[in-house]
Length: 501
Image (cartoon, rainbow, N blue to C red):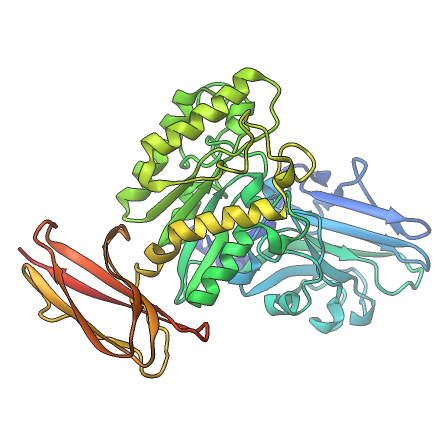
């Protein structure tokens, strides 16, 4: 074991379990499969297997090979070399620190002659192109040089890309000096620890709808609307989106799960096991129709959902499951399965279910034309707004009740209940600086609502209400107040209390 540790020390390379690895080593000794290269004449770029990154087994920083970037930049030409992680999955850069990689050249290169760097998301939208020279000095001959770019550089220049869904890192043409150069690249990672920090995470698992397919812009996708809304309400909340287009219930099953023959293996970077590494307050699952299209039976879908529900709720993590969604399926068996799974989601997982069907679907199960993105499969901007509102309404109060939370608003205050601990009743008091629309609710420790004590207009001043817990089990409970002012401002606060029989 000590030799394994020393090996990491010797090569100076340690990758955290939470880092995003875009390249560390190629299984193929000729080219890196998770890449895409293009060149427009008269510029030139060395490509292997049509459009793949060449690999060098002679020069490398660690492991057994590196990427070989051989290019010549000429006026009126262009080239680009994209590096992706395994599976071409989307990564959330907003919770990370920096992009890091090592470069090597057999001849010295002035930093001003280095390529551009930019990123591309799952919808092929790109960030602005940045000069590598802004983050690196000159490259000395025969020496591996580490280049680090703070993620904030891309956040400040996002272009049209969704930085929560970054798929590839691009190197591209900058100065056209017509000189052929070769740069070797190794250990391309985005570093950071998204599960650390003072954040409460909400993780999304799903397929193309959750991944953002359908809307005309990333901002209109329901997950991104949801992310923005939750962050505005509580800046400690972070939404991590692990959804990938084409996924079925099998893709999100736990690592180590063995599927039946002909079914997908768990996608280890985007499944429930990975979701749990964030120690989330909640997990949202949105798998609309791919199981039905692949003719997977209702019983196996339910078995998969049962496994997910058991794993998630056993860790006292909140869970919401969307129903299936409408889709223009001409196959009657597939449509029947889509509707049957919709009904099973409501009946079997009622308290976890979120309606992604009603009004969006026609009676025959097809997408209502006003919500169709145009392909009969995905939903448009307006439909995504509805999905967002339904998920928001399901999650809103419950997720904010998980942790102690208070928004500052002068003259508004929620007091600690008295007595505490209590049996069987306690008094909750609060102060309002001005007339407000007040909602005072009680939740159990899982975030499930117990009751609303107050729901309506109240005058300014000091108020108190009695809470009776005779019918409840002993344990920790949370009371949450939301006071909306005519000005549009909202005061929110949570407190915990202990009921002991």
